[in-house]
Length: 171
Ligand code: GTP
Ligand code: MG
Figure (cartoon, rainbow, N blue to C red):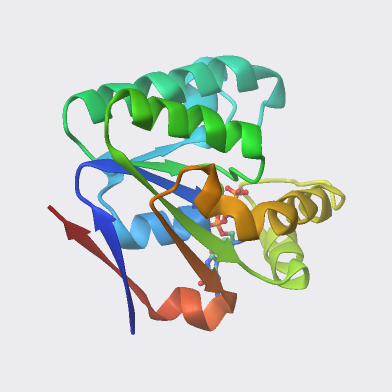
């Protein structure tokens, strides 16, 4: 069992391609109110969790919720792909503004597994070209996440490591 230590007051950024299991992981290790997902925010601003045209408003809402929770001394776990450096940068800036530490948890699964899972999903109909692009972004930045400003970077490689992980909140 691998224990991932996460500051109780702070930002957790889940990172992984669509189908890597971020929402599943978040539901397993955190309370529902601690998790803010881009899907939830898209739904709130568009009645459609898959409406990509609502992304700007959805992310503004997500950032607002993250900032509010951090200001109130609460944990904020961001459940979105977060494979793009600029997207992580916005979150890191919010954490910095609130003087809290940021942790990245990367779910690094083989492309084939993510594609297989996505094909079986009923909650999302994802074009096949999306995952390879996300994976390219992720692989390029993986080694440098620490330099971006994350205090800790936990990389879970493959289904077994993801399965064996436990999260420990530390004061
Ligand atoms: P996006 O929201 O599209 O970015 O994907 P996600 O990373 O949140 O993936 P999600 O947690 O929704 O998982 C995608 C699919 O894979 C779901 O149907 C899950 O049931 C399945 N899945 C996720 N994690 C696991 C796992 O550890 N084992 C197995 N067998 N299936 C999993
Ligand atoms: Mg999800």
